[in-house]
Image (cartoon, rainbow, N blue to C red):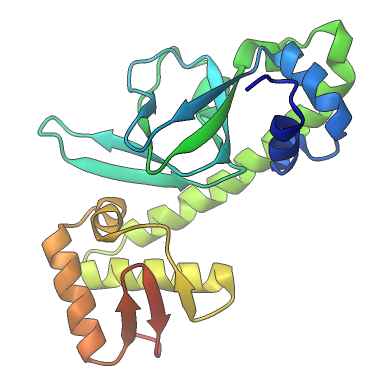
Length: 226
């Protein structure tokens, strides 16, 4: 799909990093940023640990996971990336030479990749867009920092139950309801909480029997505070 296509501009305009930039201006901005579209099938890697940290990804559709793997191949999910979110911005803009995480597609996904050096050193033809773009990226990174702080708080709990309930309460607070979907299946949730899947499944079953939560796949309801 061409970068100047109407469809691509419409999809990109939904992303907060392009707030305040007219849709008619996006094709010129894409050219200035050296942007390219990449399609990923489920399971494909967008970036691997050790790859050059020279691009920022903007997810147009689909879902990605940012993960690390230990020497025995065990996976820890750091974050789930949904449509309109950015990925690899912190490492790329920090000046890191290489990625320290893996970014993989959880489902078929479309990603817009832009060159970091083009963001930091804008060309004269589209410089009017860059100040707005940089402000939007900074705002997005600030929000991601808050989200990371929430995860640190969740993982500060020692038991599987406490981590699970801290996570579910956090999601409920963000969504403003005690009934919600989470973006993980059981294995992904275990990887995110850094616990064994069997222990997580047992805890969900135990809490359900106690009437404290109900769950069906990735749909949860909090019945009362624990």
